Image 1 (cartoon, rainbow, N blue to C red):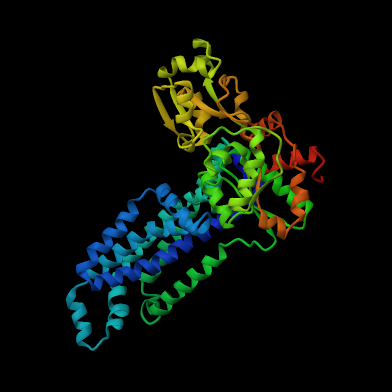
Image 2: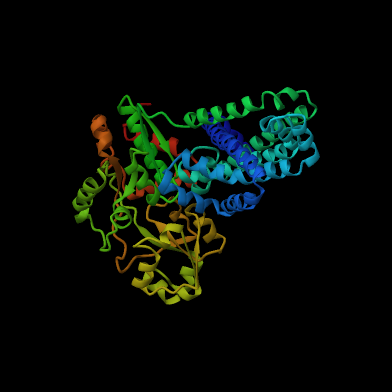
Length: 513
C-alpha cells in the first residue's frame, strides 16, 4: 500500500499540489472572514451584555446545522463552487471566535478598564490598548482551534464542486480507490498539523512581547489588512473562464471518465482549455441549476434522468421521446443535447450470489417473493426519484426488511461485507462483472433507456461554434460493454480516470500519441 501511495503521488504530483493550493485558499479565505466578522461581533456584544446571549445563541444554532444540510440549503442561493463552501466554512468558524472574544473581553478586571478611562483614554484606545491585548490569549487559542477545525472540515467542499483535498477523498470513495482516500486524508492532516505548529510558535512570540507594537498601535491596521486580504482571496479562488470550457461531472466513475473524454477532445480539437469539476454532490439535482445559471458549460447526462428529474415527467421515457426532451430543454433552459455517446446505462438490481443461488433468484419478480428477508441499499437520490424506490416497489410489490441510504461508491463493498443483500446497480458499472454479485433481469421492463450524452449551454455553442464538430466525434463512440470496461479500469484496476480516457481516445485514433 505504501508503495502505491508513493507511486500515485509521484505520478500525479501536480494534481495533489493543485488540490492542496485550492484547500489552502478555501480554508484561509473562510478563516480570515470568520476572524474579521467574529471579532467585530464579539467586540460589539461585549459592549451590549443584554443582547449578547441572543447573538451567541443564534451563531450557536447555525453551528449545530449538519454540514450537508447547510450546503444543501446554500446551493439554491449561492450555486455550486467555492463561494458556497466558503460561506459554510465561515458560518462554522464564527462561533468559537464570537464566544472567545466576548468571554475574553468581559472577563477583564473592571478596575483595569476604569483606570484606563480615568487616565483619559478614549473608548477606541481602551479597546485596542487594553481590552484586546488582555483578551488576546483567549481569542488566539480559539483561533488556533478554529483554523485546525476548518482545515479538516474543508473536505466537504468537494460535495458542492469546489476544490480542495476533499476531491481526492470523495473521488477515492466513488471509484473504490483506497490510495486516493489515504493521500487526501494524510495531506489534510499534515496541513492541519503544520499550520497548528506555526500558529503555536507565532503565539509564543507575541506573548513574549517581541511583537508588542503590533498588538497596540498597529492593531487597527492589522484588522483593515485582514479585510483587504479576505477580499483579495475571494477573487483568487475564482477560476478563469475566458478561454476555458467548464465541464461538470456527477459523483460516479462513469461521470468522471465521460467528462475527461470530452475534455480531451476539446483540448485536442480546439484552442480552448477544459476545466473539469468532478463529483458534484447531488448529481443532476445540483448540476442542472448550476448549468442554467452559467456556472458550467456542459456535463454528461442521461435522457431518462432528465425526463424524470429535470422535466418532472411522470410517464416512462422512451427513445421516441428524445425530440420532445430536447425541445423542452431548448425552450425552458436554453440547453441542448450534443455528443450522444451511444450506450444505455439504465438501472438494475444486484444481489449477492450466495442468496441468488439459495433462493434461485434471477428476475425482479423472483426477488419480490423473498424481499422481506433482505436488506436493500441504494444511493441517496434513488429514494427521492420519480422512477426510484417507491415506484419500483409499487411495480414489483417489494417489501424489504430494511432500506439503507449510502454513497454510491460504497454500495458494492457493503454488499460484499453482507451489510446489505440487494442494491441498485447501473448496467455499465465496472464491478458488475464480479462473481460475487448477480445482476437480475427487469422482467416487467420497468426501467426505460438512459442514453448518455452531453447537455450543453446553447450560449457556449454560439460563442465557440467549433465545439459542435468536437462533440459530434463522441456520437456513437461507446457501447455498453466498452463503458463497463472503462469503468472497470478505474474501479478495479485503480487507474486514473484521465489516463483511462486518454488511452481510450488514442485507441480510437482521436488523440495524438
